[in-house]
Image 1 (cartoon, chains in turn red, purple):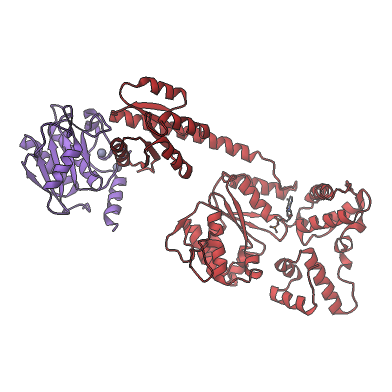
Image 2 (cartoon, helix red, strand yellow):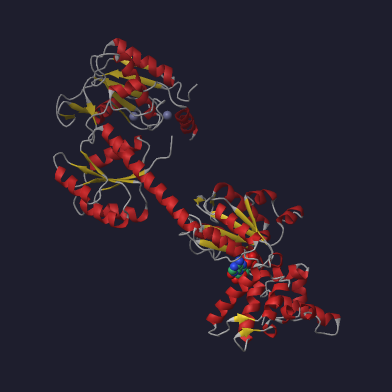
Length: 454
Length: 176
Ligand SMILES: Nc1ncnc2c1ncn2[C@@H]1O[C@H](COP(=O)(O)OP(=O)(O)O)[C@@H](O)[C@H]1O
Ligand SMILES: [Zn+2]
Ligand SMILES: [Zn+2]
């Protein structure tokens, strides 16, 4: 049996209203009832219906009033008017005002079925037409993500191919390559575009939140009132907030083992329990995850569940490092220059050829983010209308000299760590990766050298 | 074997219905649903006039109400066969009526015509008993739960459940 539509029956006659609702239930429809136009409007505020069956003569707000109110908001929902015997005039009036059809009471059963089927069919066609149209519109949106390298053009194609589907997407790539932007493009070009885009960063959740696991879980899944000390009211987690939209799970490789299990369940069932809750919550979300380190290695090391990996890795988009797609550098540098120059109201309009050469050959370990930061700094310090090499951060201008500012080995290490942290905007995970050490070692060095964020 | 097997149903002839028709109905219910059927020629005490009637049509609800009075066991089912044309308030007529997931149902012989009365009555009965087991109407033309509004449609309707309804039924009866 196919899943049937939701029908709202609006009639002031209790007997007829209930009788019709029963009849429709027997036909497999899900029904709700209202005894006048006002009650119907209130129900329409909180639920959606695929079909309205509306009596014309009712107190408080009659069928015509309801029809006009509904049509002002929704030109498409089928509304079939029900008239008493011999009141054809008002039925004709209703048709002029946008009713889909009318039926005389008592109904001929075959006629009722036919009218409902026609209304459903019309509705289906309108919806199909709208979906196709909207999807075409969304796919012709300009990309906010820039790039003209072959590898980025491939990324664009992949985004357009996957956006209209509800597939889970796993985006891989080094820090700063634009993974979050890719996720946002997937959302913007999907049917969920008008729904929320919610991002959760597991690295931040794990390292800076300093949250006990249950609090991190409650961020994700929400909690019921009284689920734990301090849970003074029901709180929705990001899973619920993202309902109807896209949930972006950034740095998924940092998710705690218990959270990995919970995520797996959500991916499989699209439902979960709030902390302290015993009623499952159903959600309609699309999940896009990102990772800056190879999950395959994390799996081999026993830090990431392979079953979760397979659920996430349905469609894989790999964003290559900037040094492997140097064609994109001028386009990106130009865009950032225009943006920062406008933001800071500075008339920096160009990049000198020598600067452009440096930008094109530098290795960009921090990828697009580092390029963006470099241009920002250059615009801040630029004295003229062009950016010259001296305006660039030192490690970009003279890469080989970046760490040689001290005499002792320790001084060099300190300077190099400080520079890397500054460049990575104190993102510990990324800095640690670039430095080739693990995070706890980096934390220890920060303490040792008494480094602090400027 | 259907999960409905073993339940008992009382077939109540509320009017002078030919024994052959009653036999056809009870045989069909036994075959299709696996119920054990006993027949009672107990005319229901239908009021000859009043709010139970709309003109010459009898409200099905009234029959179901009287039928319920005959049941003394909780898991018993009952099906009445009447000659009068029956209806529900919002409809011009119905050929049968049943409580969804309930215990009582009724079919009318008023619209089955002169021919094939046994076969047609049996089909009406099979369908209404399906509603007693909480089956809703089915879009599948090859299914006895497809709704009909005329004798032609009734003749085209099969006597067996489609596999979707069958699995639906199994699921429902297994659920607590
Ligand atoms: N192709 C691109 N076009 C324009 N801006 C980009 C592009 N890629 C990255 N950026 C910018 O670079 C910064 C880092 O991108 P982000 O998506 O946060 O990277 P990641 O998630 O991979 O660390 C952001 O400010 C983003 O706007
Ligand atoms: Zn039916
Ligand atoms: Zn069926």
